[in-house]
Image (cartoon, rainbow, N blue to C red):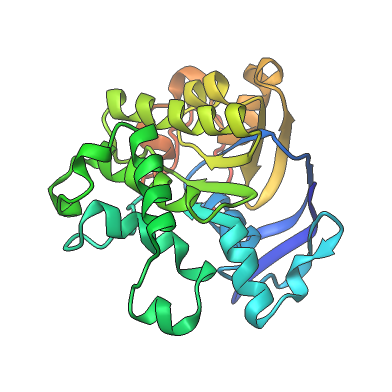
Amino acid sequence: MLELDGLTRTFGERTAVDHVTLAIPDGVMLGVIGRSGAGKSTLLRLVSRLIDPTAGHIRYAGREVGALAGAALRDWRASCAMIFQQFNLVGRLDVLTNVLIGRLNHRPLLSSLLNRFTAEERAMALATLDRFDLAELALQRTDTLSGGQQQRVAICRALVQEPKILLADEPIASLDPRNARVVMEALRGINRTERMTVIVNLHTLDTARTYCERIVGLLDGRVVFDGTPAQLDPGRVRAIYGVDEHEIDDADARPGSAPPRARPCEVTPSRP
């Protein structure tokens, strides 16, 4: 189980994540929703220890993740794989090499520096690509692929890390509806087939309801909703976004967007 206890992160006078306490059992597919600036990306970066908490605790299987350092911290980051909105692939390298980069933490330093991968690792990477219908593109430059294909390559790279937890930060925000559906179905397939914990930040309510068994809503860095899709009723949507659901469009929740538009006489909660 992944446990967050009073998890807080401040940047100067701004509090991005504010005393978040959650217990996330193994094998759950959890969606995190909220307006731009609600703290969704910061929360995932705290869990993966890409940034350190200002206060609070992160525990996994009873182990204090916040206290890890050196090799133990590198091992945690490998077991808690991150998928980014902008893919974070090396465009000039071929698809297979980009996937194999996910194995670097499992290799001695010299071999990692020289990118010397074993036949078994190459077979693993190819099998993972084949699982996502990408094997025929293994030797193609990654920057020639479509956005949906690149995001699937990023998922493959994360999987060859052999993680226990998969974190996805707005993985479909820059994709068209068809590719967004392919990527979300891939993440749900991983969750169901391997019973891997998947935590995904999303910008649309319909996507969260369709693919996630549990949804957490953030506002100003605080948890204001934690429940099932069926429990995400109009009142709770209003608590998360500050407006009624029919007033929310995709742009309202995308990173860098303006705050949601409120009705006359309604007050939209301030951004952190």
